[in-house]
Length: 123
Image 1 (cartoon, one colour):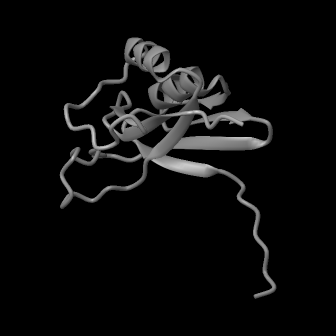
Image 2: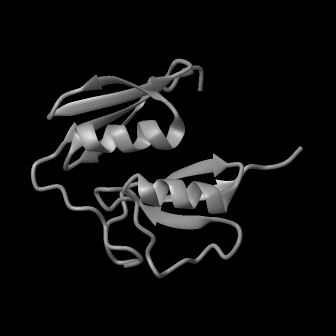
């Protein structure tokens, strides 16, 4: 194959794009570069994540393996305990089911979409 594509950005479905972007802006330390009720975006170092309004959006049930899981983000953090506390204060919730043991922690963002915080690799 000779075609080489570059990832322009990731767009995520959302029930509340502005709040969704504000949460991940805080979690990642990225700038909110656009924020309206229908669409919001965060960016850093030439990479962007967009959040688009989808009427009737419902997040997947966690940990229901029969539900349609759409995506999840893995975020590296220096200290999982500190990051968890800060993300919970920012509006995340922590489900009871935690399959990662000490390798990662599953949280749900403010609209209920799962994401993981993982210890940053050393070395």
